[in-house]
Image (cartoon, rainbow, N blue to C red):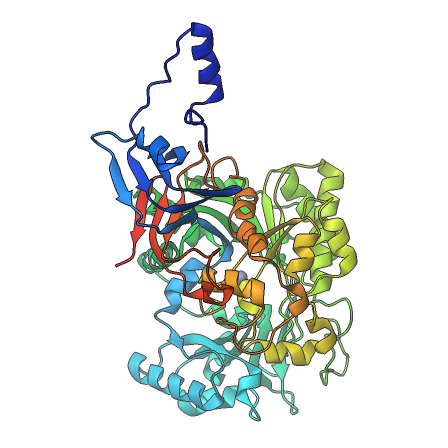
Length: 570
Ligand SMILES: [Zn+2]
């Protein structure tokens, strides 16, 4: 930063030289200057930056940036505060998070008794006959009484009840809900789903994966106003945590419409990619042609909302339900007589999946896979490989999401195939979902649980995805700290998968430049440099200069997107 004229674009500089003038280009005044801070720039730190038309026009030493100050410039004195680029979250369900605010919720890790008491209170509040939906339970916390509809029947005999588990891939319904869905002891398991049954052959009320749809169909959908309000609430939450760009990992037409509406009103501040859910059944039978997403999705496209992504669910979760697809069998055997779930469930047959992804890639759609087990991750990479072979490298950032387990041979081939790994921060340290998974998978494979270090070292693109509200928080500062420590926030307790720790520099890149690249906007965002958009955060501490175990306490003071202040802490 020694060259005082380093902010003049090279081309303009040479033009002036040719014109024979010794004067610097006239400086147009900035709209906004951030002054006297610690500003993270590639390779070091700057003190000030200037913004015009949403673009960073200067960043460097105080005196150099001051040249952009004019009568109309708003100057924010940072008084030593830290500025970094806005953060990315590549797997989030904002509408769901907003809607969950009004549901029957109990804390993760709740006992059967707490679940019953909560449902009882919700029934009293909502009245007889009303639907009760909520969560999130887990089998391990139920202790000796496994999840069963009778637990709910006792407190809600006349209300249909359906409660998600903490993975969001299983639900527990009561008898009234099963009755409305027409699920009896004779109902066969649907494709891609399991109706759990007890020793007498009766449905227990636990519904895995697609089996939950039969009940879910009867739950009254949110009204358009409710969807808008839910989305808006979550967008504000994200701004307060410094998320300036994100991928919605499961939209539908109602959600796409909500984004478009907020964008039209100027209320959508973040840069958003929407991944529309495609249930395997909707892909059609073998040989059927693929419905063209272009026919419906582009009507919702806006400047800050790109509904250009398709979400395909390849498996479930590696919990006691054994729905994640694993290369090696689960450690703990289920008392399944036919052992269908020894290696979990792959939701889409390989030939159909590959053909689908080849076709989506050819038409320019980015694909996001849900893949928790290593066999599902492999299926996703195989499908990307099929697309690359058929279409060449289209530049689309197809991404494999979650990656709870990845086989080493798949890490080896991922970078060459242009695979993006989206890793889930909220499960890479101990929390209530982990004991259930560790029991199902066994200790050996847990050593490389959520292998972010392996993914980073593979040189494939790695991005973060919180999966909020399936996890209780979207706080990226917790994610950044715990990627380095693999311990609970504050460095508490035991390490989880300690072999997969990354450095602070590595996880910082994952949340900034990598996120921008995966969003196809690295030419716009991801770092603080002259010419990029002013999507920046003012923080209450410098995460690079404090003990790593304090990073989770970081608070965002100001969030700026495209030069506009979109959030300010009280
Ligand atoms: Zn998700």
